[in-house]
Length: 212
Image (cartoon, rainbow, N blue to C red; front, side):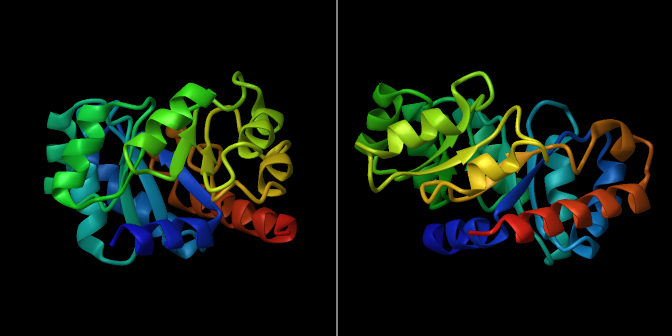
């Protein structure tokens, strides 16, 4: 299961990082993502609507839904119960990784230093979230880490947008790139499904042009 999910994320090249304030907006957002050509979402546990939003999106069956900002084992349980198929954490937590493993669900812990990458490797993982990418050295830092950690793949998130997307997608060690520019919180909250769909389609087209 883990390999299949990670393969899907790598194939998409982009992972929309979503903040939903109301689960009522989840279905419209899911439609915008699917219709825009990017049937993937990382719904962050930054609001009380996260679990319900994941459930709404997962129940559709036409997109890969994960949970982001997962920082406790309890949130792992909530995310899995809601239907999340992968988990993303801002840091590397043994407790979170082990609980995810108990559920048989892949997890991408945050790692931006050599020590953190090694910690993830010791937990049996080879794909990590590089967060916050923009303030942690960006693409140059990932390239430097990839030299000694040849088997590790990175999903940079934070400070990534159309202007610097090419820097990350050009790196062989980058599995996919997380971002929120195509799913702006204010447009999602306003129910602007058409506007979000257009942004998603533009992001997909840009990533396609940048594909090595």
